[in-house]
Every structure is written in structure tokens, then in C-alpha cells.
Length: 338
Image 1: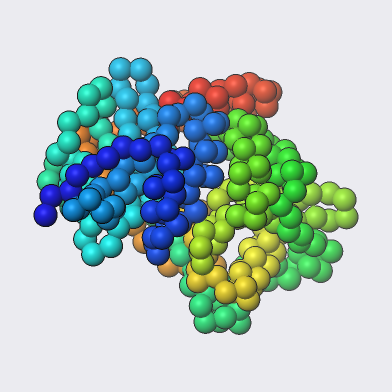
Image 2: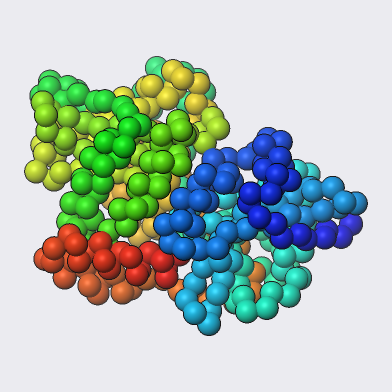
């Protein structure tokens, strides 16, 4: 059966109703997340819906990204994984239909899920780590490596405390640590307005929170978690390297894991990790998470442009210059590497 494609606005009530009725919809299919990305970087957003006999059976949100003269559709940039909505094979038929449809001025379409369709190319994007939580907090905590548990107890003995909040002040405090962390790593900083938009669209309405480790009035580390259905997603982390001896990150994760299991979350998604980042992969696996490949589907031009090479070249400079320079650099690189 052939699928007919229709482009529509994300504000269209038909799209919103389709997402609301989809059992497999996540936070990242919803207008709030897409609004954060489009408002921060100026990307045009839209939805593509596949119809059979006039009924919507599959669909996905997209952003128009890329450089001038090489525009692409992405579903979605800055999102680790996003499977198109659709049941009983409809999502795969939808992707196949996208591959057959001419797209004037668009070099490729990227979907952040794996589909074996004619004309599609699979791209290894890294790995993700998932920690199951359905058998309760005690079982989840037993999966944690002894070294992480010792570090968490060390933090407690040192007087480190964990607080959870969704106020603007919590996000602003996280951003201060984020700027410090990115500079230490030699990486460009995401625009401050990205986190302001995240606070307004996602955190404040209750779709996420910031967990902060404090020692007295000092903020040692913080992490942003997003609530996507029954999955809790670890999205961003940052810390003050001068406070690492207190092991604040270990206490954050142990606290969040126990709380998430108690609240009925199905799993904790630690997010995407580059294949070559062995240290981060070991850290995430140490919390009892299992590793699985992240593979994306590209329709059309399979050439993958990335700012990673340019960032590696300028990393030594980023570590030396002012945070304002790193933020200005991030304005350019994040927009054109999406």
C-alpha cells in the first residue's frame, strides 16, 4: 500500500492530535522541544505525515538545517535518537516514501533511527546507554559499580547535598558550570538563549529538572535531566574541576537513579557517546547501563559534515581565551553543524 506524504505546521491541530494519540511518542516529538531548537538556532520546523486511505499512520518532526547551498532535513538535530511515529511497519513505509519523494534544494534527509530502505544509507553515530529501572530502586542501585558507590558515600561524608529544582535560577547556575566545563574541555559553548529556551519550554513546565550538588553555598556540579514518558534522559552535565575531590557527580547519579526508580520510570537514558570516547563509555556502563549502537538513516547524499575536526584544531585556543569568545564560537558552530 502506498503512503501519501503531507507537510504541515507543528502548530497544526492534526499533528498535535496525532502525537498525543501515539503510544510511542516521546518528549522529543513534541512541539516544546522542537521550539527550543528552532527558536535558538533559527531553523524552520515542520512535520511530515504519511497517510494511507486518508488516515495518518506515520509521521515525524523535521528542521531545515545546514549551510547555504547544502540544505538538509533533520529529525532532529541535537537529539540523540528519534524514531518516526507509526505502528505495524508504517514508520518504515513512511521512510521509504520519503526516500522516493523529490526534494527541491534539499541534499539529504536524516532520521535518527535505523531503517533498511531502498536508497537509504546507515550511519553509525555512536552508542547510547540505558539503565533499566522497572525492578525498583534497590535492584537499580545494586547494578552500580562499587567504585561509584564508594565515591557517593565519600561525597555524603564530606557534607555534599543534592537538590533538585526547575526554576530559572537552577538553569542559570547550571549554565555557569557549563561554560566552565566546556572551556576546560576545549569545546565551544552552547548559546545562553538555548538554556533560557530550555528553561521556559521544558524545565519550568515540569518536563525536566536540574540536579545540583552543593557543599554549603558552593555549587560543585549539576546535571540536566529530561522526562520523556517513562524514560528519564540525562541530557547535560557540568562541574567545577576544583571540587572533584568531593565526588559530587557520583552522588548526583546515585541520588537520581534511586529517585527515578522510586517514581516509576522505566529506564534512565544516559544519552549518546562517541565511539572513541572510551572513558565516558566506561563511566556510563559503571552505573549498570547496557550499551547499544546508535545508527541513523540518511536519504540522499550520504556525505556527513561535522564540526568535530574544526573543534579539535581550535581546542587549545578555546582553553586559553575568554568564555565570551567560546560562546561566540558556539553561535556559529552549533548552528551549522546541526
